[in-house]
Length: 50
Image 1 (cartoon, rainbow, N blue to C red):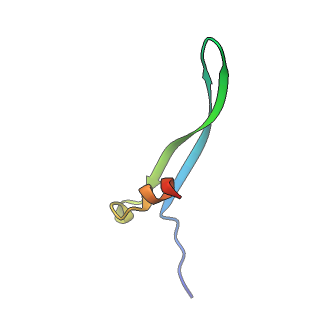
Image 2 (cartoon, rainbow, N blue to C red):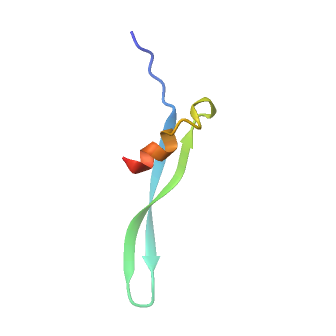
């Protein structure tokens, strides 16, 4: 049996961007986190590229 562990997470937050002429709804990536022992292994960057 393989042990499973969550080592990262990402939260998408809906944001509204307003200007004088228009309003746009988008998603913001924040926060994004990786457990310390799994950092510097390309996990965070790989999440955004996928």
